[in-house]
Amino acid sequence: MYPYPKEKKHLHIVVEKVIDKGMLICAFVSSIPENREYDKSCMLEEGDTPFIKHPSYVVYDKMQFFDASTLERMIENGQIKDRGHVEEAVLKRVIDGALNSKMTPNIFRKYLSSV
Image 1 (cartoon, one colour):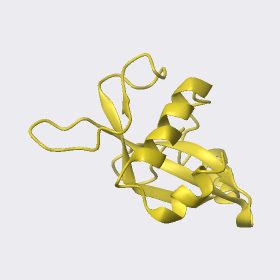
Image 2 (image 1 turned 60 degrees about the vertical axis):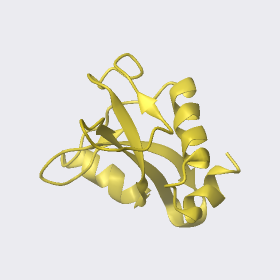
Image 3 (image 1 turned 180 degrees about the vertical axis):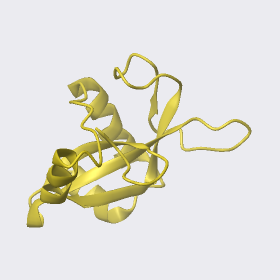
Image 4 (image 1 turned 90 degrees about the vertical axis):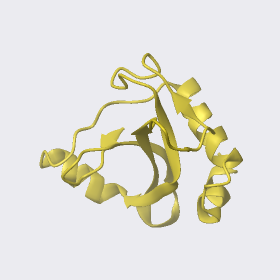
């Protein structure tokens, strides 16, 4: 997992390494908003990972590809922090949520359906 490399850090989960060109699929994690709709396909709670401290959800419409070598370089340079591995059961929930969410772009479904 890694925080999004922008001013405000956001957690992402590296879901799957894509064979093509060393790219990774990353899923964006956000706090559950008050008084606003959100995708309930995969919600995460404190205890699902050591770094989630409040109710969160996976924002599938913000999934992205990320270059593996760039990610490694950013970790080495201290631009982002590697938060370690996600337990297999949590990762399965994230992938299942991606396959079930209406918000997941089709390009990601193509890769994740073969996981």
